[in-house]
Length: 343
Image (cartoon, rainbow, N blue to C red):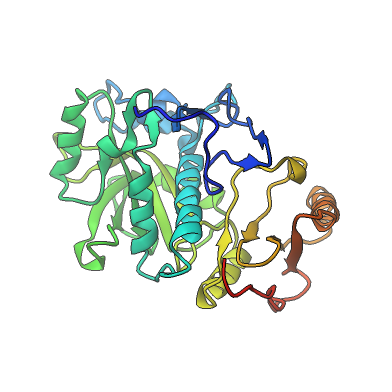
């Protein structure tokens, strides 16, 4: 791996500089990711990526996070967190460096290509995910990737899925996903166990597509369709921004229509945030503007207390402006912060 200074980070990076202070929230795998010489070493549970010595290579996924396995360590990175980390990093990087001239389109091509460009930095040990990435080629590519690593683990994939599957065959749903560069005309079939998909849908609170769908896939010799060993759905906006609620999707679709430059933090990298993670950051305002979306009833006491604390803290920061939308109280998105003419 190419050596880089430990303290050189882009603002769109998983780690980021704040004045002369750097976040170390992941320095000891506390979130399943450790930065080493400019790369991100992933601490993924072995059941999520190592191939299992079973009759059906996907049986072990019933023990994974998606299938009900309860991990004792908090330091493993879930497959959903892996997709969210990579997807958010790709979105943030594109928004910062490219979107001012070429805003992401509804084809998802720009963000997908940004994801691919970052996979060389995300590693399992010394192995970059880019070297085992299945990008929606013909199904035999999965076998070729597995062979290249001595059949020790499956291929990693992260494709676009627009609609949840309805086709069920022998306990498996058939997913039709695609590489945005090739388009919807080249759908690739992937199998996922019924209980794993249903548990993942429940975890995402029933959010509909589009998604980035991903995880580790393997191709049993007896099957023509690759099967997910581990699996997650990452809901996205119509422009490819990772989102976590229907309200966020509405907002980020509107931000996309207006070509607003908003990043999606995944860690509390700025010490001024006091451990809170904003829902978004407008980087096209002066100063930057913290964005929050609230969408639950005040009857949810813990959520309401956190909401009050976040509003109070974020609105008191001198280096940021603050904007929020309480979607539970008002269905209309408020007037957005005024953007500056140039970054």
